[in-house]
Length: 302
Image (tube, rainbow, N blue to C red; front, side):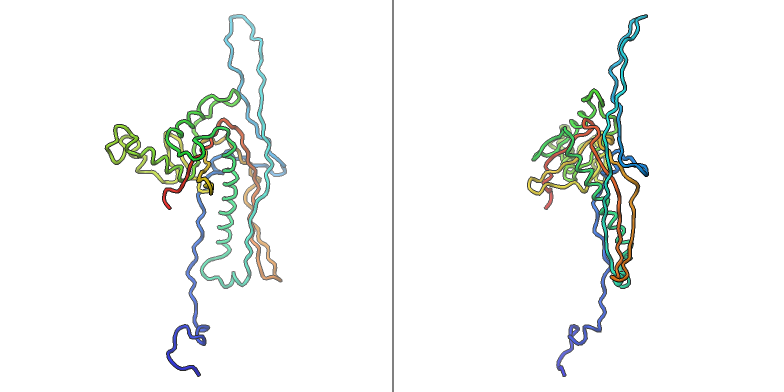
């Protein structure tokens, strides 16, 4: 028989002690606004693919002479892109015993919420991949984004760069890595770069209110909505990221129905498989109505 002081971790007594598992939090999903910032079309049931067209502009109207017949006739022309959605999905398998014994959360609802975040992340990343397909790009790898690049990109979009499509209509918006947004804020708040306000801690005029209210998730600069796109990646070797300033119709997303949630039970294995599936496809539609914002995004704080 053992002698001496009895401790809480005595081997013969630990099996009689209950263990409290604190309520588990869920991993946070980054902001994923990108699918909402492009043109979205629904593929009707029974259809295999979507042919999406935009009518090209006609030639400029002609000046007429009195009583002289207008001889030329313009032909309507449509530029088409074809998108065939593909299916995406994620699955979580939970044992019957786990569902009975897990006391700190309803694992079914947690699984559903986590799978929804995962599916949204994939859809957002598919859209983000298209930012690299815009021909126009600024300021370039290793360069820090500043207000000049921002204004220049917007000016490019509003310039008539294409006889077929014309300038991008307003409004346009930006979807950027958070360090790109940070660089813009630095540029407009740097006392040395604001001329008459150089002696002040904060610039005077309209920027004053902008700065005080920044970081709400989406803000406006020169009328352009700036969205924090949390899934834009930073290149591991060069610390660069690729965001965009664009019009909504420059990119298009075709969805085939909504998300489909399913569950299937295997009684002999004593498990339930939960799945969430959604079908979509995406493509560049109007190249001149978007600019890739490719810039340095080295971490400001490490």
